[in-house]
Image (cartoon, rainbow, N blue to C red; front, side):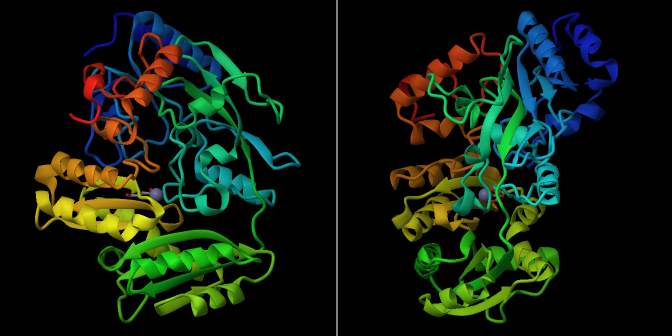
Length: 465
Ligand code: 2HG
Ligand code: ZN
């Protein structure tokens, strides 16, 4: 599918011909999602270099009725930034300028700034960014804002939403709205930046973000703790959250099968001689050395098998690697069916059993690799060995989660991959409101068409597809 005649040359006149890619060899990396499972043939990739270029490009596309997909680091896991055939991809990666933090720890960054660049700048000024995740070298702050990314420190600092003080954004018709430096208090109606956080590129293009940094803890310690039941690990997280003194920074869970695959993939020794069923990674940080606190938690926790602790940075990184390498490992041995669910806090064990039964009901010898953010009961469920039944596996597992009152997407978003199941987490009344919001922002429905909201015809029965 080609773009309307003349559109690409008009766009090239704005951004420069070198920033308009049409050669499939060059567009392939933008056309394909991170998992390699989703692909569209874009009409062009347009790499904008400033807010005003972004505005002009959206104005030209809008006037030509050209559908647009916004893309940052292309590390998303639900194909929210993947084009349909004929879409124009507007890449925001060149919007990568960032300011130094001010005395209060706020800084303004372009949407294309990577998470790693923000972390580095923050550190250089004695600050830290409150969100961290494994894709830090490629994931951009714009994409993380558009998806309200979570990551491993949500238990301490919240998700992206909690770090954002203001946004500059561009409407589908090219209008620029600057809500970057708004007053600390401002109750003058609907909060537009807040509506864009988690909108997955369907409402407007986020061009700049005002972030609030946090103070880093002076000392950190990480422990891997082995348990024979998930319930014991959950009880330990409760214990770890309640103490005074050093704060819980992360509480990540892994299970024996995933950990074994990670060790084989990384060619490293297992952390424990006797592999426990459940492994909890706890990180504490504080102005005082948290080792004592960690030892205390381990001593008081129920059903602890074994534990390893590190407080030097190399040792901490070594323990984190077991957890962070899960996604890479899965991509290498998969690609798996990727699901990202949240369960009601009290139903974790039951939820895992229900998800296993659901998957095995479709493909009896499929393998579930489960890990995730235990404090939020957010489990990443990656199903291997089910290539021929991806949709059916996803359907069965997500229905099992919804039946328990869980969310079908805890942090990765809905994208194109999960639209068919939106009705499992959102009522028809809610979906009607979401559609109204979409129409208000993007009346011609040119931004990320087919992302987040299922096709209009299914509105009558949003929980079936
Ligand atoms: C993580 O927590 C990410 O590492 C990715 O959300 C999870 O690969 C996944 O399923
Ligand atoms: Zn995650």
